[in-house]
View 1 (cartoon, one colour):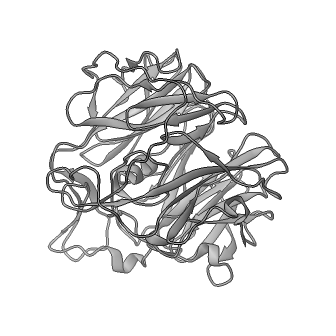
View 2 (spheres, rainbow, N blue to C red):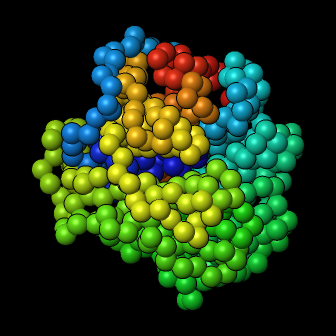
View 3 (cartoon, one colour):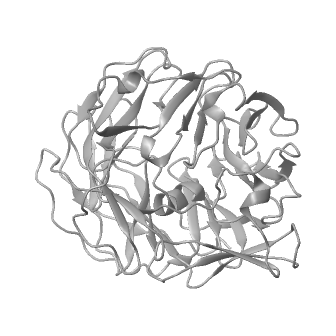
Length: 462
């Protein structure tokens, strides 16, 4: 789970989940326009609004889908004494081993690792100037990749990746190809095979961990790589098979493209959404989740194409746009995505994720539900603890139906800005930092499927 995903959850309208209320702003930190047009330093300082108190948000209006069993009503409150400032990315790769990456208000990105389930953390890496949209790929206990723009927003410097293959003891920086633009999306499936999607419309592949990059496709030959106002997503599951989510506009939903030759050619993949659209709707497809080379699934969300009245007022200082959800569907493949089953509707509230082909999780605004029969029936809603004012759930990771983690964030601090400070008229390097009261984050864990949650102590990640 990356800081980019957490930031997108708070700051974008892309790839909307199912029918629970999810505020997202319509502001981005990494538009796909040419780099030279995106940032201009005025008297040495460029500022961009960071959080939603002055920009619009988008929601789904709630509809009456419910888990089939009665819900538990409440949990004890938590005080979050270990809360810290900044943006958090995390992933546990086993029951005991987990990684975190945090963007701090002074512009540092720090990476830490635990080997005892979060009781202790070891500070492993610190990089200045990457920004809160930094992708963090934590593949296993040994391999981790951080990607971002070198030296803040200095576009005379290409983006780069920072990689470790020994659990964080040593890190190597490897630059993206020169003159390729800014980083749109990045993915690695192991320490050797990776892809960079750049704002100039090129897709690059490496087979040696980023030491060398080869251009394999471009927007001139593939519509999948054409830039748009929607943040694209890139995901590979093998050296040859991968997917892209892209869209011509925010209101068009997300289109799914697939490749079977390592990214050289891409084809539009609309079979998982066959027949789910209705007049006046838009279809939003997610990236496929594959559990092995053959078995996987993809979520499809259908909403109104035009906005509706919101069921609750916007927070102070924010404007709100709402869309009516028409349903969430799942389509299954047994041959690695060559064929897909007819989409089946899922009757549950929340953003759905998969542990395997039968064990699923739905995280709604107030708790989680689980399914052991591929979404046919669902457990009672297990509410999250009562959180302090201003706090809300962010990213959920469940290793199985019992053990999992959820990050929390607090955006109540008011207006924020991301400042890029450099010499007047300079093209970089810049020092990025947050101006204003930065957001806060915390991390909870459960070992009983969400019936009880305890705070993970994050002391030591710096």
